[in-house]
Image (cartoon, rainbow, N blue to C red):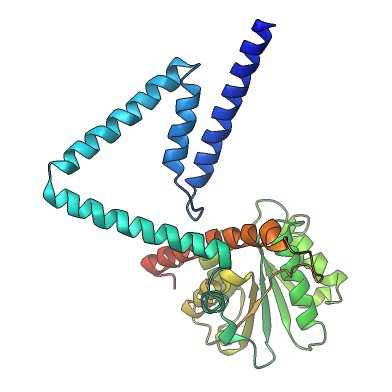
Length: 293
């Protein structure tokens, strides 16, 4: 009986330590609020009871932190810098928590999704940028919006864009085309671009596909909301002068989900949106530094 209790406690302790470390690693992901390093250290402390390697790693982290603190204490300039850094981290942490609780600001979401550039004229080209493969939520939603918007148009060419190393007719880019056909778009009105590995390359390859006069024709770019501004700027950089954008985002439940729906769904959706916005700003910065937008 004592053996069973002892080993039961050990299994529970090891399980708890691993779970705590995994939670800490998750909190260290950019855009996820939380003291990831502290939680990982706590997990190592739990595992250190049973594993020598965990004890050594915990001691190494603790000694490193102690040396850093000692250096800062002996350097006035470093102390001031440390305090300012902590203040910045605290402000960023509070902003992240606030974003998770109430969601990203509406004006920021509207700016990224280019709501000021909704189509005001019939597009000559509708460009559907793929997300994942088919089936995938993002790409299916984008083809849905493209078909709904363009089904009644005449003289409009649809271009579906998604890279592939195999036959485009039997890969996901071909299935994007097939999805549009199922929704009423004539196959003869659809072209495929399958070489671009990122938004910049997609815009460049589509520019090469079309004749020179196409840059002065109205085009409509369809993509997910936070990606739209970067996509639109890439096509403008390639010389297209009449670019509009259409947000292809999913919608939530169209029913009252109960008093705890905010806790069950809302904060998780907000956390996901926050991570996507941070990623998109990093992508915008990268594209700007490379001269792609």
